Amino acid sequence: MKLTVDIDPSSGFCAGVIKAISTAEQYLSTHEKLYSLGAVVHNDEELARLGAMGLQRIDRLADLSTESPSALGRESFPVPPVLIRAHGEPPQTYREAASAGIPLIDCTCPVVIRLQKSIREAWERLAPKGGTLLIFGKKGHAEVLGLLGQTDGKALIVENPQQLDALDLPLGGEVEIFSQTTKSPVEYEAVCRKLRERVGESRLTVHDTICKQVSSRHKSLADFAISHDIIIFVSGKSSSNGKVLFDLCRSYNPRSYALSSGSGLQASWFREGDRVGVCGATSTPKWLLESIKNEILTNNY
Ligand code: SF4
Image (cartoon, rainbow, N blue to C red; front, side, top):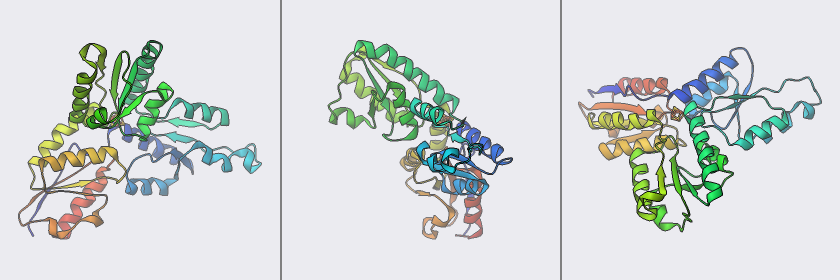
């Protein structure tokens, strides 16, 4: 079958993920082991590559207790540091690490650090006056937990516009809303529109906090999806940014297919002469997009 395959030039890791991965690689070039608190990137293939270099995932700092120097009875044994990924962490994590003497390599993305600070400051303004702080984001997502922590867990999380109707949210006093950095700009606009109807313009402040790399990618990805016959979207199953961007592709091109590795490709998707577009999330490595392009071409679907 004759196919043309293009890789979306704007796909691949965002700056925050690149920084976290290169920091891990640099550390592991001179050390045997580094922990990461949570997956450093939502992509199994990239995690396997980093795992082979010595990056080991833990889900809680408490998981290290069995490996602490005192547990091993070797006070001088250096504890490998823990990398904080680009999503960031709540203040509680930093307090726990300090009290347990666990060294941290903090790779929180500067954009997320700014957002955490803005939320902290907004909450200091709102809380004494009985105001409300909303975060548009995915409940339980690492970045959202870090943002929520800036308000001692008091912010309200909204996942979609419908929730503003369905949930009986106590929207008292002044209301300020922030978005998780990787959410869809279109959905955020819909949430803010609904919120405006509920509380009125005068009580509401909307903060434009979607990452510019994400919002600009929405526009370029839509163009990419339209200009190809079929879209192969590559992303880890747990990537929330991946779900958002895949839905975007599918809304512009119904022949969009999602997979996490080349083994998911199916011959029945392709038609003679197709112009195939290969793209991915902010957590999809460029090398994986290249390998899927090669697989499509060499298998001659
Ligand atoms: S999506 Fe943007 S804010 Fe989030 S880690 Fe990447 S660069 Fe940072």
